[in-house]
Structure formats: structure tokens, C-alpha cells
Image 1: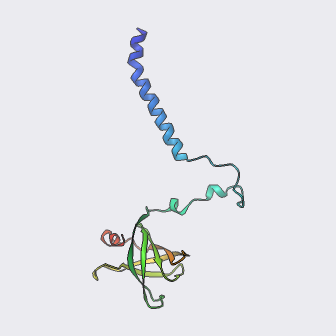
Image 2: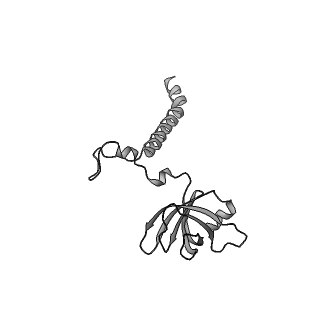
Image 3: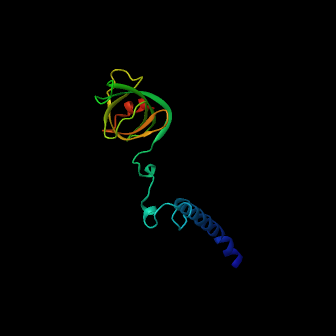
Length: 156
């Protein structure tokens, strides 16, 4: 009789063990590696690490890399009124653009893909950040309004 019960409950026991093991692995992976309790050298101890979060983790939309796409930028603040650049990565929230000259944060620009037909509207972007990346400057830009999908696809 006891062997019969053992054979009856064996699949349930094995399935439960596998499920619990999988759950344990998933929860452990989400938590990530255990951090050291000591603060890194040159950084204050306390709440600093709890509040620090990379920009990528705070991003509302997924950023996509791809082949750089040539764009045309225009603004009254640009020296010649119009300049060329390249989209380095893009999301539904904005673009990361490489340009030849620094453009201060807070500047409003109009942008369009270099190969876009004249019927495609200009897209308004706001420069959120500008950093020197060696041979060029990288602008972190936010769309004033997310453009239609067909226009967004022209940026790569």
C-alpha cells in the first residue's frame, strides 16, 4: 500500500521541487549580485547607493542602437541656421545625436532624416545634455511630442 502511494505522489513531488527551484533562480537573478556593505572609496556612506540609479534604468522607453542615420538639424541658434548630424541611438522618447559643434542644453531644434522626402514634417527636439565625445559632441535629445511611427522609423 505504501509503495502504491509513493508512486501516486512522486510526480507531484518532482514537479513541486522543479517549480520551487525555478522560482528560487528567478528571484535570485532579479535581485542581482550581492553588494558589498562598505562604501566605495571616495564616496560617502549611507543612503547614497540606495538612491543612485543609472539613467538607462530610469528611461521611460527602450533605447535602440543601430546604424548611424544622417540627419539635418535646424535652429536660429545654429551659426549657419542648419547643420548635419547623425542619430546614434533612438527611442520613442528621443534621440542621441552626434554633431560637430557643442549645442547647450535647453536648446530647441528641428530635425529631419537626411534621406526624408520634403513631405515629411520636421520634428521638434529639446537638447537635454551635451558632452564632448572626442571628435564630435553627443546630444541627448527629447522629443517635444513623439512623432508618428512612419516618421520615427526614418531615424533608424
